[in-house]
Image 1: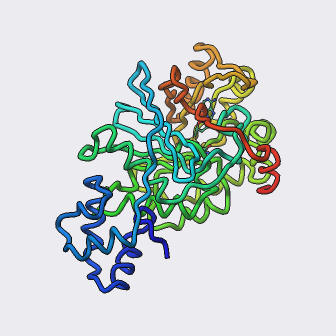
Image 2: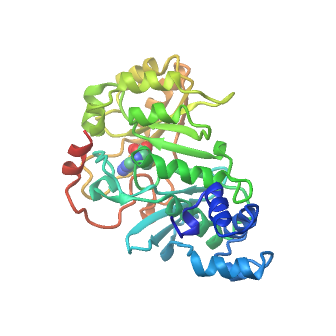
Length: 354
Ligand code: SAH
Protein backbone atom coordinates (compact mmCIF):
# COMPACT_ATOMS: atom_id res chain seq x y z
CA UNK A 1 0.00 0.00 0.00
CA UNK A 2 1.39 3.33 -1.08
CA UNK A 3 1.31 5.86 1.75
CA UNK A 4 2.25 8.86 -0.40
CA UNK A 5 -0.92 10.83 -1.07
CA UNK A 6 0.72 12.35 -4.15
CA UNK A 7 0.74 8.90 -5.77
CA UNK A 8 -2.93 8.10 -5.26
CA UNK A 9 -5.71 8.48 -7.79
CA UNK A 10 -8.97 9.42 -6.14
CA UNK A 11 -10.50 5.90 -6.23
CA UNK A 12 -7.37 4.54 -4.53
CA UNK A 13 -7.56 7.26 -1.89
CA UNK A 14 -11.23 6.42 -1.32
CA UNK A 15 -10.30 2.81 -0.75
CA UNK A 16 -7.49 3.79 1.60
CA UNK A 17 -9.92 5.91 3.64
CA UNK A 18 -12.55 3.17 3.74
CA UNK A 19 -9.97 0.63 4.90
CA UNK A 20 -9.26 2.90 7.83
CA UNK A 21 -12.90 3.31 8.77
CA UNK A 22 -13.46 6.72 7.17
CA UNK A 23 -16.02 7.82 4.60
CA UNK A 24 -14.94 7.56 0.98
CA UNK A 25 -16.26 10.98 0.02
CA UNK A 26 -13.59 12.71 2.10
CA UNK A 27 -11.20 11.84 -0.73
CA UNK A 28 -12.82 14.68 -2.69
CA UNK A 29 -11.93 17.15 0.04
CA UNK A 30 -8.38 15.86 0.27
CA UNK A 31 -8.01 16.24 -3.50
CA UNK A 32 -9.25 19.82 -3.31
CA UNK A 33 -6.71 20.64 -0.60
CA UNK A 34 -3.80 19.02 -2.40
CA UNK A 35 -4.49 20.12 -5.94
CA UNK A 36 -6.68 23.22 -5.77
CA UNK A 37 -5.34 24.92 -2.68
CA UNK A 38 -1.82 23.51 -2.72
CA UNK A 39 -2.04 22.44 0.94
CA UNK A 40 0.02 19.33 1.67
CA UNK A 41 -0.09 19.41 5.47
CA UNK A 42 -3.02 17.18 6.44
CA UNK A 43 -3.39 18.97 9.77
CA UNK A 44 -4.23 22.16 7.87
CA UNK A 45 -7.12 20.53 5.93
CA UNK A 46 -9.61 22.31 8.13
CA UNK A 47 -12.88 20.96 6.77
CA UNK A 48 -11.92 17.42 7.80
CA UNK A 49 -12.58 16.04 11.26
CA UNK A 50 -9.68 16.23 13.63
CA UNK A 51 -9.56 12.47 13.79
CA UNK A 52 -9.26 12.17 10.02
CA UNK A 53 -6.62 14.90 9.82
CA UNK A 54 -4.55 13.18 12.47
CA UNK A 55 -4.90 9.80 10.80
CA UNK A 56 -3.73 11.28 7.46
CA UNK A 57 -0.78 13.05 9.09
CA UNK A 58 0.21 9.88 10.92
CA UNK A 59 -0.17 7.35 8.14
CA UNK A 60 0.55 9.29 4.95
CA UNK A 61 3.16 11.57 3.50
CA UNK A 62 2.94 13.95 0.53
CA UNK A 63 6.08 14.08 -1.60
CA UNK A 64 6.61 17.33 -3.44
CA UNK A 65 9.61 18.15 -5.65
CA UNK A 66 11.62 21.04 -4.25
CA UNK A 67 12.84 24.00 -6.28
CA UNK A 68 16.64 24.05 -6.46
CA UNK A 69 16.95 26.84 -9.00
CA UNK A 70 14.64 29.07 -10.95
CA UNK A 71 15.85 31.00 -13.99
CA UNK A 72 13.95 33.58 -16.01
CA UNK A 73 14.59 34.19 -19.70
CA UNK A 74 14.48 37.60 -21.33
CA UNK A 75 11.29 36.40 -23.08
CA UNK A 76 9.56 35.50 -19.79
CA UNK A 77 10.10 31.76 -20.02
CA UNK A 78 11.07 30.28 -16.66
CA UNK A 79 13.06 27.12 -16.11
CA UNK A 80 12.76 25.25 -12.82
CA UNK A 81 15.40 22.81 -11.63
CA UNK A 82 13.57 20.45 -9.29
CA UNK A 83 14.89 17.91 -6.83
CA UNK A 84 13.02 14.66 -6.22
CA UNK A 85 12.80 12.71 -2.97
CA UNK A 86 15.81 10.54 -3.93
CA UNK A 87 17.92 13.56 -4.86
CA UNK A 88 17.53 13.14 -8.61
CA UNK A 89 17.12 16.35 -10.60
CA UNK A 90 14.69 17.21 -13.37
CA UNK A 91 13.69 20.36 -15.22
CA UNK A 92 10.26 21.84 -15.88
CA UNK A 93 9.56 24.95 -17.92
CA UNK A 94 6.89 27.66 -17.79
CA UNK A 95 6.20 29.26 -21.16
CA UNK A 96 3.91 32.31 -20.95
CA UNK A 97 1.62 33.59 -23.69
CA UNK A 98 1.89 30.95 -26.40
CA UNK A 99 -0.97 32.20 -26.56
CA UNK A 100 -2.03 30.32 -23.43
CA UNK A 101 0.11 29.75 -20.39
CA UNK A 102 1.96 26.47 -20.79
CA UNK A 103 3.78 24.14 -18.42
CA UNK A 104 6.35 21.91 -20.09
CA UNK A 105 6.67 18.84 -17.88
CA UNK A 106 9.15 15.95 -17.69
CA UNK A 107 8.15 12.28 -17.58
CA UNK A 108 11.56 10.66 -16.96
CA UNK A 109 14.91 11.53 -15.40
CA UNK A 110 16.87 11.67 -18.64
CA UNK A 111 15.76 9.76 -21.72
CA UNK A 112 16.68 6.52 -23.46
CA UNK A 113 15.76 7.57 -26.99
CA UNK A 114 19.15 9.14 -27.79
CA UNK A 115 17.92 11.39 -30.60
CA UNK A 116 20.97 12.77 -32.37
CA UNK A 117 20.17 16.46 -31.86
CA UNK A 118 18.79 16.37 -28.29
CA UNK A 119 20.79 17.18 -25.16
CA UNK A 120 18.49 15.22 -22.84
CA UNK A 121 19.28 12.19 -24.99
CA UNK A 122 22.92 12.62 -23.94
CA UNK A 123 22.02 11.87 -20.35
CA UNK A 124 20.66 8.44 -20.96
CA UNK A 125 17.79 7.29 -18.78
CA UNK A 126 18.30 7.39 -15.01
CA UNK A 127 14.75 6.35 -14.12
CA UNK A 128 11.05 6.84 -14.77
CA UNK A 129 9.14 9.49 -12.89
CA UNK A 130 6.20 8.33 -10.79
CA UNK A 131 2.75 9.76 -11.47
CA UNK A 132 3.09 11.79 -8.28
CA UNK A 133 6.36 13.28 -9.51
CA UNK A 134 4.83 14.16 -12.88
CA UNK A 135 1.81 15.82 -11.25
CA UNK A 136 4.13 17.25 -8.57
CA UNK A 137 5.85 19.41 -11.19
CA UNK A 138 2.48 20.93 -12.06
CA UNK A 139 1.69 21.53 -8.38
CA UNK A 140 5.04 23.19 -7.81
CA UNK A 141 4.87 25.42 -10.88
CA UNK A 142 1.25 26.44 -10.25
CA UNK A 143 2.16 27.49 -6.71
CA UNK A 144 5.46 29.18 -7.56
CA UNK A 145 3.88 31.13 -10.41
CA UNK A 146 0.73 31.93 -8.44
CA UNK A 147 -1.35 30.28 -11.14
CA UNK A 148 -3.59 28.01 -9.08
CA UNK A 149 -6.71 29.87 -10.14
CA UNK A 150 -5.70 30.46 -13.73
CA UNK A 151 -5.98 28.18 -16.74
CA UNK A 152 -2.88 26.62 -18.20
CA UNK A 153 -1.98 24.01 -20.77
CA UNK A 154 0.41 21.15 -20.20
CA UNK A 155 2.83 19.76 -22.75
CA UNK A 156 4.66 16.52 -21.97
CA UNK A 157 7.69 17.81 -23.84
CA UNK A 158 10.23 18.10 -21.05
CA UNK A 159 12.78 15.43 -20.28
CA UNK A 160 11.91 11.90 -21.23
CA UNK A 161 9.75 9.90 -23.59
CA UNK A 162 6.23 9.76 -22.10
CA UNK A 163 5.23 6.55 -23.89
CA UNK A 164 8.36 4.86 -22.50
CA UNK A 165 6.84 5.52 -19.07
CA UNK A 166 3.30 4.72 -20.12
CA UNK A 167 1.51 3.65 -16.93
CA UNK A 168 2.74 6.47 -14.70
CA UNK A 169 2.13 9.06 -17.42
CA UNK A 170 -1.48 7.93 -17.89
CA UNK A 171 -2.02 7.80 -14.16
CA UNK A 172 -0.70 11.36 -13.91
CA UNK A 173 -3.16 12.50 -16.60
CA UNK A 174 -6.03 10.94 -14.63
CA UNK A 175 -4.97 12.69 -11.42
CA UNK A 176 -4.61 16.00 -13.28
CA UNK A 177 -8.03 15.60 -14.91
CA UNK A 178 -9.89 14.89 -11.66
CA UNK A 179 -12.59 17.52 -11.23
CA UNK A 180 -12.13 17.57 -7.49
CA UNK A 181 -8.48 18.43 -7.97
CA UNK A 182 -6.90 20.53 -10.68
CA UNK A 183 -9.44 19.56 -13.31
CA UNK A 184 -7.02 19.88 -16.22
CA UNK A 185 -9.07 18.50 -19.09
CA UNK A 186 -7.05 16.17 -21.36
CA UNK A 187 -7.76 18.47 -24.30
CA UNK A 188 -5.43 20.95 -22.58
CA UNK A 189 -2.66 18.37 -22.44
CA UNK A 190 -0.36 17.47 -25.33
CA UNK A 191 1.66 14.28 -25.24
CA UNK A 192 4.72 14.34 -27.49
CA UNK A 193 6.34 11.08 -28.54
CA UNK A 194 8.91 9.60 -30.89
CA UNK A 195 6.19 7.08 -31.76
CA UNK A 196 6.63 3.90 -29.73
CA UNK A 197 4.14 1.87 -31.71
CA UNK A 198 2.64 -0.58 -29.17
CA UNK A 199 2.09 2.23 -26.66
CA UNK A 200 0.68 4.49 -29.38
CA UNK A 201 -1.90 1.78 -30.17
CA UNK A 202 -2.65 1.49 -26.46
CA UNK A 203 -3.08 5.25 -26.16
CA UNK A 204 -5.64 5.14 -28.97
CA UNK A 205 -7.87 3.06 -26.67
CA UNK A 206 -7.57 5.20 -23.53
CA UNK A 207 -10.64 6.86 -22.04
CA UNK A 208 -8.45 9.87 -21.26
CA UNK A 209 -7.14 11.22 -24.52
CA UNK A 210 -4.53 13.99 -24.62
CA UNK A 211 -3.64 15.79 -27.83
CA UNK A 212 -0.97 13.93 -29.73
CA UNK A 213 2.31 15.24 -31.10
CA UNK A 214 4.69 13.00 -33.03
CA UNK A 215 8.38 13.86 -33.22
CA UNK A 216 8.83 12.96 -36.88
CA UNK A 217 11.83 15.04 -38.05
CA UNK A 218 12.28 13.32 -41.41
CA UNK A 219 10.05 11.91 -44.17
CA UNK A 220 12.05 8.74 -44.94
CA UNK A 221 13.30 5.83 -42.82
CA UNK A 222 16.82 6.37 -44.07
CA UNK A 223 16.97 9.91 -42.73
CA UNK A 224 14.87 9.34 -39.64
CA UNK A 225 16.86 6.28 -38.60
CA UNK A 226 19.94 8.49 -38.32
CA UNK A 227 18.19 11.09 -36.19
CA UNK A 228 15.79 9.04 -34.07
CA UNK A 229 17.36 5.62 -33.46
CA UNK A 230 14.11 3.94 -32.39
CA UNK A 231 12.92 4.47 -35.98
CA UNK A 232 14.93 1.39 -36.89
CA UNK A 233 12.35 -0.54 -34.87
CA UNK A 234 9.18 1.45 -35.58
CA UNK A 235 9.42 2.99 -39.03
CA UNK A 236 7.81 6.02 -40.63
CA UNK A 237 5.12 4.12 -42.56
CA UNK A 238 3.95 2.25 -39.45
CA UNK A 239 3.78 5.43 -37.42
CA UNK A 240 1.79 7.24 -40.10
CA UNK A 241 -0.58 4.27 -40.40
CA UNK A 242 -1.12 4.32 -36.62
CA UNK A 243 -1.79 8.06 -36.79
CA UNK A 244 -4.40 7.55 -39.49
CA UNK A 245 -6.20 5.12 -37.18
CA UNK A 246 -5.85 7.32 -34.12
CA UNK A 247 -9.21 8.58 -32.81
CA UNK A 248 -9.36 12.36 -32.86
CA UNK A 249 -11.77 14.85 -31.41
CA UNK A 250 -13.73 17.02 -33.81
CA UNK A 251 -11.57 19.69 -35.39
CA UNK A 252 -8.44 18.33 -33.76
CA UNK A 253 -5.25 17.38 -35.57
CA UNK A 254 -2.12 15.44 -34.80
CA UNK A 255 0.92 17.68 -34.56
CA UNK A 256 4.06 16.51 -36.33
CA UNK A 257 7.17 18.06 -34.88
CA UNK A 258 10.00 18.51 -37.30
CA UNK A 259 13.35 19.73 -36.00
CA UNK A 260 14.90 21.49 -38.96
CA UNK A 261 18.62 20.77 -39.41
CA UNK A 262 20.71 22.59 -41.99
CA UNK A 263 21.50 20.38 -45.01
CA UNK A 264 20.13 17.27 -43.29
CA UNK A 265 16.33 17.40 -43.55
CA UNK A 266 15.59 20.91 -44.82
CA UNK A 267 15.68 20.55 -48.61
CA UNK A 268 12.74 21.34 -50.90
CA UNK A 269 12.64 17.63 -51.71
CA UNK A 270 12.27 16.82 -47.98
CA UNK A 271 9.40 19.29 -47.72
CA UNK A 272 7.64 17.79 -50.73
CA UNK A 273 8.09 14.26 -49.38
CA UNK A 274 6.74 15.34 -46.00
CA UNK A 275 3.66 16.92 -47.58
CA UNK A 276 3.02 13.73 -49.53
CA UNK A 277 3.50 11.55 -46.45
CA UNK A 278 0.97 13.55 -44.46
CA UNK A 279 -1.69 13.68 -47.16
CA UNK A 280 -4.71 11.97 -45.65
CA UNK A 281 -3.61 12.50 -42.05
CA UNK A 282 -5.48 15.11 -40.03
CA UNK A 283 -2.27 16.87 -39.21
CA UNK A 284 -0.37 20.04 -38.69
CA UNK A 285 3.39 20.42 -38.86
CA UNK A 286 5.34 22.29 -36.25
CA UNK A 287 8.73 23.17 -37.69
CA UNK A 288 11.30 23.57 -34.91
CA UNK A 289 14.51 25.19 -36.13
CA UNK A 290 17.33 23.44 -34.29
CA UNK A 291 18.37 24.88 -30.97
CA UNK A 292 22.07 24.47 -31.33
CA UNK A 293 24.24 23.44 -28.37
CA UNK A 294 27.87 22.51 -27.83
CA UNK A 295 28.36 18.86 -28.72
CA UNK A 296 25.29 18.71 -30.97
CA UNK A 297 26.68 17.96 -34.45
CA UNK A 298 24.08 19.92 -36.44
CA UNK A 299 23.37 23.48 -37.44
CA UNK A 300 20.30 25.62 -37.47
CA UNK A 301 19.18 26.42 -41.02
CA UNK A 302 19.16 30.01 -42.26
CA UNK A 303 15.90 31.94 -41.92
CA UNK A 304 15.58 31.73 -45.70
CA UNK A 305 15.81 27.92 -45.60
CA UNK A 306 13.27 27.78 -42.77
CA UNK A 307 10.84 29.97 -44.73
CA UNK A 308 11.34 27.99 -47.90
CA UNK A 309 10.61 24.71 -46.10
CA UNK A 310 7.47 26.05 -44.45
CA UNK A 311 6.27 27.68 -47.68
CA UNK A 312 6.51 24.45 -49.68
CA UNK A 313 4.41 22.69 -47.05
CA UNK A 314 1.82 25.47 -46.98
CA UNK A 315 1.57 25.51 -50.77
CA UNK A 316 0.67 21.84 -50.62
CA UNK A 317 -2.15 22.43 -48.16
CA UNK A 318 -0.29 21.38 -45.02
CA UNK A 319 -1.10 23.38 -41.87
CA UNK A 320 2.30 24.57 -40.78
CA UNK A 321 3.74 26.74 -38.04
CA UNK A 322 7.32 27.54 -37.14
CA UNK A 323 7.97 27.15 -33.43
CA UNK A 324 9.38 30.26 -31.91
CA UNK A 325 12.28 29.31 -29.75
CA UNK A 326 11.62 30.31 -26.15
CA UNK A 327 14.06 30.49 -23.29
CA UNK A 328 17.15 29.70 -25.32
CA UNK A 329 19.27 32.07 -23.20
CA UNK A 330 18.62 29.89 -20.14
CA UNK A 331 18.80 26.61 -22.05
CA UNK A 332 15.12 25.98 -21.49
CA UNK A 333 14.25 25.53 -25.17
CA UNK A 334 13.34 22.26 -26.90
CA UNK A 335 16.03 19.63 -26.56
CA UNK A 336 18.10 21.71 -24.14
CA UNK A 337 17.04 20.17 -20.83
CA UNK A 338 19.88 18.24 -19.24
CA UNK A 339 21.00 17.82 -15.64
CA UNK A 340 23.41 15.01 -14.87
CA UNK A 341 25.63 12.39 -16.44
CA UNK A 342 24.46 8.93 -17.48
CA UNK A 343 24.98 5.65 -15.63
CA UNK A 344 25.17 3.49 -18.71
CA UNK A 345 25.75 5.10 -22.07
CA UNK A 346 22.56 6.02 -23.93
CA UNK A 347 23.53 3.59 -26.70
CA UNK A 348 23.68 0.69 -24.23
CA UNK A 349 20.30 1.59 -22.83
CA UNK A 350 18.70 1.93 -26.22
CA UNK A 351 20.02 -1.48 -27.20
CA UNK A 352 17.88 -2.96 -24.41
CA UNK A 353 14.67 -1.43 -25.76
CA UNK A 354 15.35 -2.28 -29.38
N1 SAH B 1 10.50 12.35 -26.09
C1 SAH B 1 9.35 13.11 -26.54
C2 SAH B 1 9.10 14.30 -25.66
C3 SAH B 1 10.16 15.39 -25.75
S1 SAH B 1 9.49 16.68 -26.68
C4 SAH B 1 9.52 13.48 -27.99
O1 SAH B 1 10.61 13.30 -28.52
O2 SAH B 1 8.57 13.90 -28.62
C5 SAH B 1 10.84 17.65 -27.05
C6 SAH B 1 10.79 18.12 -28.50
O3 SAH B 1 11.96 18.91 -28.76
C7 SAH B 1 10.85 16.94 -29.47
O4 SAH B 1 10.06 17.16 -30.60
C8 SAH B 1 12.32 16.93 -29.80
O5 SAH B 1 12.57 16.26 -30.98
C9 SAH B 1 12.63 18.40 -29.88
N2 SAH B 1 14.06 18.67 -29.77
C10 SAH B 1 15.01 17.90 -29.21
N3 SAH B 1 16.21 18.47 -29.33
C11 SAH B 1 16.04 19.64 -29.98
C12 SAH B 1 16.91 20.68 -30.38
N4 SAH B 1 18.22 20.63 -30.14
N5 SAH B 1 16.37 21.74 -31.02
C13 SAH B 1 15.05 21.81 -31.25
N6 SAH B 1 14.18 20.85 -30.87
C14 SAH B 1 14.67 19.78 -30.25
